Image 1 (tube, rainbow, N blue to C red):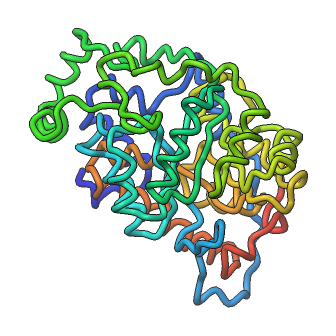
Image 2 (cartoon, helix red, strand yellow; image 1 turned 45 degrees about the vertical axis):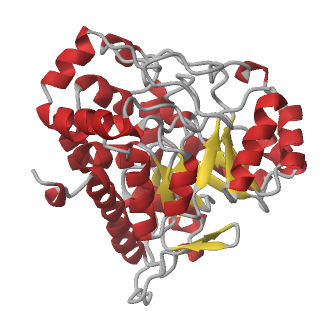
Length: 383
């Protein structure tokens, strides 16, 4: 199957599985422990059914959404996903370019291997995600770096106090930092196309990739321990640090990883501009509530805050359900990475266009002419 023949995100997943070494595919595809939260994210969408409105003029449809005074052509974007360079050469740039092409928001992962300054040059409206320790000797210089690069939106992920246990990655010999081993070697040999397009090209042109954006300084190579261990100090992060970040950071501030209405309210009181309702795609605490199930109570608690969501989006109907329940925008992680692994920037663009086309058609079939008109009246709980 060619990239252009992929009709669904499921098709792209199969292509990515064929193109990537098993260890890398397992990294982007799996979750933590029993992967119960991964399944919960998908099943949550089945608990809502559409109530269609026929005889509505939907000849001209508007898929645009406005976030932080910026208009995007699509109501969904790309979530931060680390070490995308393992899927495609300079994968961070490929993700950013595809998002720019279709007019979607893109969040650059802190665990990225292309300096954020290069990504900002390509896509000036890029949002930057951060994993921050409770240490302002690290935080303050990092915020200065973002300001110098003219980043406008900072997304602080708050649900990774410690690294989760991802058994599928361990069984495949995958870890971060990446530890060369026999499983990784055999997996690479079995995917000669990946060896030439990604592995050798990266080594010949850029050398061993480094973690470029955890702090104000360049991090270590992805095959060694990160300078200053990027996880060190995260377990000590509290609302006090968030409040101080709010005072020091002049741009838009988003917290990613909120599942409680009271936490959303507290974020609003601190002055946060937006939140992303998220359980990290089922990659952190297994058994956590699905993002979609948590969404309605959060929207009700903070009606004036920009509330967004990620977790489990695979279809245009998923996008519409989340928006109808109050999300301003949703983000996709695995679908974009499937596209990236299957065909680089072209594959990411295919993933985005698949969901875009589904959103467009499904919006018309629902009997709604504009994304901005969606609300819970278009949904009913499933039996």
